[in-house]
Length: 294
Image (tube, rainbow, N blue to C red; front, side, top):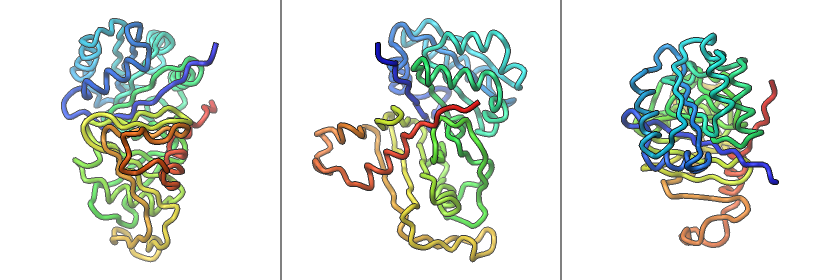
C-alpha cells in the first residue's frame, strides 16, 4: 500500500476569525473528508479563546466531528499529554498564532513539534498554518521587521522556524499590510532564499516535491533573487532604500495550479503548453520539503 502523501495549507490570514470556507473545505478533504480528525493548536500568550472556538465551529459546520482545540500559552502546555494524544490522533493539524515568534517559542524543540512532523511525514497528515503561524512553517522565518513599501537596509532579521519547507521565507497578510518592501529586503539580504507573500483570505496548498496551488480570494507573490544582477545592500547605511536589479517576480492568483510532473492545466493556455523554465524551477524549490531532524 503506497504511503499517504502529506500536504501543507499555508493561509495568509483570515479577514475575520476563520479562513475562507473554501480553504477549510480543502484542508478537510486532503485530510480524509468525513473521517477527518482535526487538532487545532493556538500558540502564544496572545492566542484568543474566541478565535479558537470560532475555528473549531467552522470545521464542525463542514461536518467534521472529530475536532479538538487547545490554547497553548507556554511550552509546558504544548507538551501536555492530552495535546500529544490529540496530535497523534489527528489527520489534520492546524497551527495558529498571532505572530510567528509565538509559534517558534512555543514549539521549537518540544515533543509536540516532533509529533506534528511525524504526523505529516509518516502518516500523511495535512498541516494547516494560519496567519502568523504561516510565516513560521519554513526553516527560515522573519524574527523582526517593519512593514514598508520599499526595501531597506537592515529592515529585517531572520531566525529558525519549524522547518517544514527549506530555502523559503513566507510572509503573511502580504498585500493588505504592504509587505512587498519587507520581502524584497529579505531577498536582498539572502538571495538564495525564495520570498513568498501570501495574501489574507488566500492559501498556498503545497504537495511536497510535486505540486503548488493557490486557493481563496487573492494572490501569492513569489520573489526570486537568485538571478539578481545588482543590490546595494552592504553599501548603504541602515534604513536606506536599496537598489536592486533583475529580481524575478511571479504573481499567482487564486485558481492557479502547477504540477511538476503534469505542468499547468490546459485552461492556463495564456502561458501555453511550454512551461517557462524560471517558473518550473522556482516552484520546484518552493515545494521542497525538509525532512525533520530532531
